[in-house]
Amino acid sequence: VVQVLAQGSSQHSKVAFTNLLKTKYNNDFGALKSAWGSVLPSGINSWETFQNNAVTINGSISTNVHADLSFLLKKFAEKYLTINRTAIKREGGESHLFTGVRFAGFFRAPQEVIDACAEICDIISINYYNYTTANERDDWNYLLRKDKPILITEFYFDAPSRGSAISDRTQTTTDQDQGDAFEAYARDMLSKPQIIGYSYHDVYDQPLLGSIWTENNLTGFVSETDRPYPKLVASAKD
Image (cartoon, rainbow, N blue to C red; front, side, top):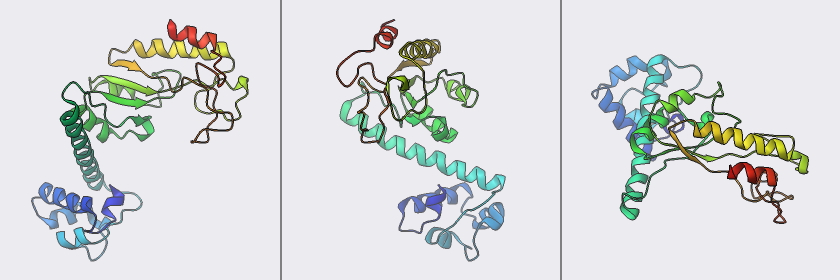
């Protein structure tokens, strides 16, 4: 939102944001100027100058400005999701479920976008790399209160003891630990009625020389030479 406001009228989203604020403030630019105060750069004194020029927002902002940025973010998300939902339903029919944006964890899941997903998507999807859904750092309660089906679309457990040069996110020590971690996390997810399923990241280990994402984590059910990891496979079967 901040990046869009810093653009001029050649950016279609800036025009849309201006029109949204016009409606919210009943076309009264003075009301916006009073609410935003010193955040508005000098020379921005009308809806036309607001739309045509960069409105750069830096540093701390007032409650009023924060509320308007939140309002614009929600509207942006609603528009994006509606366009995609309409296309999916048009091409695939109502039997095709719209799973939204697949959040890359909570740190990239603004509440405004979660709210929009809860209103428009059939399922809320999120990648969640952790050992439990009870992590206090992440606001699972906010997501669960939306009372929408949730799909965990990506997670894994790395076993660096097998020789991985890079190990990040959810590490375990041995093959046994990896299988135990999978089983505990899967049972935790299945204990939440809103979580309807989950998808493990890899069938195979990533290449030792690195994937296209430069990762070479040993996270698969099967090695690069088609050797299964018995404990992880058994935990998934259970």
